[in-house]
Image (cartoon, rainbow, N blue to C red; front, side, top):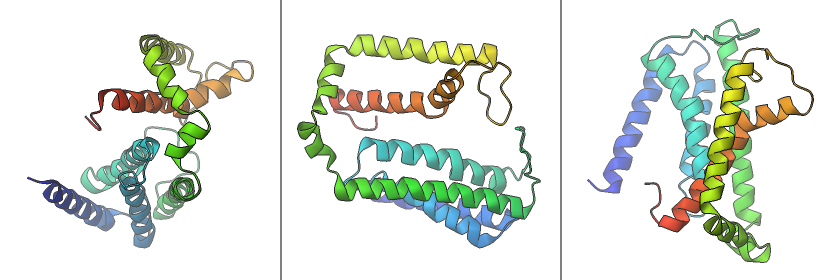
Length: 213
């Protein structure tokens, strides 16, 4: 099958999942519809012609973590139970609407930033102007050391957080560290390590010249 057939089947699956979830969703249908359009739009933006690797990486990351996970949970599993502490969230349709509106606004900001970058900043031209190609040269020269350092840091941060419970999503920290260490742990676990991994993946794709494999 060619790529057009795969895309067609993918959109059919999305349409079916959307329809099933929309029927079971207890909030307003137009809120879930907007939620669907924005997150799937950001996913598609990650594969447009003038994309950069971060557009693709975070498009897939956000789509899986928000829209796909939510739709499967509501539409296919039929559950609204959450194991995390949820504060004022009471599971009502209004609470779901409020959560989806906040998520949609955040995703729209990501889309806007991507479009602004495409309109006013050329990633390829800036590589030479600002010396960003130096990152690739540095990585090629010290590749093994960078990978070892990243792996060591990843394991160290994860192990420390498991043992001391410094950052727990939806729960209060059990160990309070002096500032600014709590902020550093939170940033690394929620965004920082994934950003570094995306940068490493981009360089690996450049070296091996085999996109998305």
